Each structure stands twice: as C-alpha cells, then as structure tokens.
Image 1 (cartoon, helix red, strand yellow):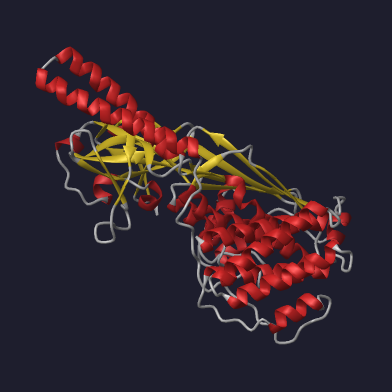
Image 2 (cartoon, rainbow, N blue to C red):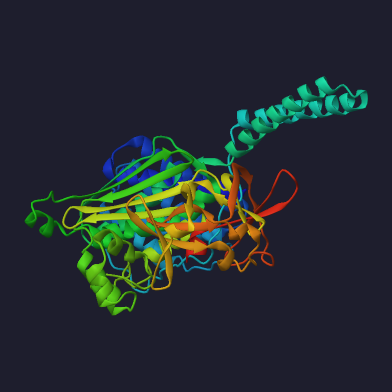
Length: 509
C-alpha cells in the first residue's frame, strides 16, 4: 500500500512540476507539490524509511520557500528537483537501496553549481504494479451479475430435475447473456487510460531536449481511450525509445531547422485512435526524416542484405530494414541512442503482445511510426484452421483474406513457393511442413486453402487444409515447460479439445 500510494504522489509531483515550468507562479501547482511531498514524508516516517523522509522534507522546504517568495523556480532548480524526484521514486520502489543524500541535498541548495561526486542512480529494480484502481460502479456490476448467474444456475438445476425442455432453453439463453455481460465487465476493469503514461513521455522529451539544447514541443492526444493494463505496461519502453530517437536523431538543431526554412522549434505528436479491435498509436515528428540510402548502406555493411538486393529493394521495404537487429544509422554513439539496439527491440516488444509497427518517412519532412496494438490479450477473435487433421487458431487481427487456389497457381522461384495476390507476389508457407506435422489426406486436395497474413507490413500466405469458423477465443497461457518458440498460448474449444494459438510473427521469423 505504501509503494502504491507513494508512487502515485511521485507521479503527481512529476506532472505538476512539468506544468510549473510553464507557469512558475501558479499557486495551486505549488500547493499540490508541497502537499504530495508532505504526504510521502509522513508515510515514509511511519514506515521508518528515514532517508526517504529526509529527501521529501528538503523537497517540501524548497517549495515552501518558493511559495513565500524567498526562492524562484529557475531552470537549474527544476532540473535539480527532477533528479531528486527520480531518486525518490527509486528509494520508494527498493527499500534496500542505500544512498548518500549529501550531494543531492547540496544540489537542491545550489542548483546552478556542478556538484562533484554526485552519483547517478540507475534503476535497481523494475517493479510493475500488481494493482489497478477500479470504479466502484464496475465492481458493483460484476457482483450483481454473479448474483443473477447464481440464481440462473439454481433455476437450471431445478428445470433439469423437472425435465421441462422449453424452460431449459430459456434458462440456457439467460445464462448465456449473463456470462457475456460478466465477460464484458471483467474485461472492462482491466482497462486503464492510456494517457497515464504521458507524464513519462513529457519528462523524457524535456530531459533529452534540454541535454541536447534543442527546442521541442510535444503534443499528445488520446481522446480518452483505455487499454488493457498488461498491454500498456508492454508498450511503455518501446514508446519512450521511439521518443528518444525522435529527439536525438529525428529533430534537427535550431540552426539546421532555420537553414531548411523550418520553425526553430521541432514538433513531436502522439495521437491515439481506435480501429476495430486494435489501438493505433501514431508518433510523428517534423525532423530530417530517415535517409533510405544510408539505411541500405548500413544494411549491406552489416551483412543483412547484399549490394544486389540493396539496388533492387523498394524505398518502403528498405525502411523496414530499420527493424533488423544491430542496424543503427546514427553517425556517432551517444548515451541516449545509437548503439545499434533500437527499432529491432521496439518491434520485438510490440510483437510479443500481438502488435505491429509501421514506419514511413520523407527526407527533410519527418518520420511517422504507427504502433498497432490489441485492446486486450485475454479474449481475441480467431480463425480455426485445419492442418493435417489438427485444429489451430490464428488471431483474426493478423488475417487479411482467405483464398481457394488451384495447385497450378503456385509458382516456384529459387526454391520458394509464391502466388499472385492483388498485384503483389506473396511467399507461401506450408504450415504442415513448418510444424513438422505428417501429411494426411487433408493435405492432398487439388484445391488449396491460403490464409493471407500481414506481418511487419509484408504479406505471407499460410497454406492450410481448410478452416472452420471465426470465433471468440479465450487465451490460456502455456507455462514454461509447455511453451515453445512458436507457441505460447492455447485455447479450449467448445467440444473440449485444446487448440494451440498460432503466433504469425513467430512462424514467419
């Protein structure tokens, strides 16, 4: 409870301090930071966390002096406060963290001076919250539904005893409705507003732009959209990494922007929208864009593609090479980005939660990155397919189309089978071969069934023996002993059979 409540107050201090930088005389902001620091100090004292209490007391004193007009919130003082707030966050998360507060307290008193031997605290522990704040009305709805379900269960038992089949159908329909409503409410309580991570985005852009002496405006709009908590946790690091890249490599210096006829201040925007069962997060900057020729050159140097392939590849395909491991187009290594651990990590983290990443860019105009993520991970719509007599499920969000083709429509080039689909060439993947399932009579049909998948902006054809239907699938996570590189989830079908859930990106990789 201490960690949960204290962390909320730290986030509030962070958010309010960012607002104070734009409006340093706003009394309500000053009062809010003072109250939050005072609250954490009291909680830490109760828990006997004396260092945490001492740090809060000093932060509290600074804001008391600002309220009295004895101090002014300068840029240097803001930066010193942010350093101490970051330390405070780490001390709250890790009770075993031992810190010498002296240099931090000196920095608060003399923010414009360079303090020698001031340690930089790295995150000693990464703790994700195991709790979500839920509206009482949502909990009340679930309790009411469970009560109704219990009543319907007793009605069902009584009806079965009386063997009244018409009444049995009625009760069955009622139970089906209640279970659907219960499922909806249960999913709803896992949803959290996506804009709760915006403070971290603001801090990231603020700190890096000031370090690089760039003027950058960050505009964020989420339209109040909510997302599953586990997906939100998974997307925070990729989003922050993209923002760091935008500030470090995307946005030019003020001098370069003026020379190019742009405004002195760079712009980054984050917009969130909903498309079907997915959330689209669009990060866009008006910087120098991505040099496609440099991407090709680095890809050839790193052995990712040959020079011959580089000469033939389209600009859009070349752009996707940015997701290749170890490929960085940064001309120099910085402590912000550019060590070759970049978009490949972002893409793999997004794909782990069944999401996709699309990159588009125009030289000297800017770059746009779109993250597409499912609303939740617990229940998805999937297509049941048959591969050599076995049933598997493929997430519907990955599927573009299903086709019936004849054997003679399959062409082979350099040992790879492909078909023509909507004026483009699509490589075929025979799933029974890939999954090493022995062929049966299902695989000997003259007419072939192809499931067209889009992965990382490329289309692929999964060759299967047939498909049954699309339906809602309740995801069951496989434990460490059962899961593999290709499968980490399964589902239980209505007839009681278990079907493995195919991860298209894992199969393609």
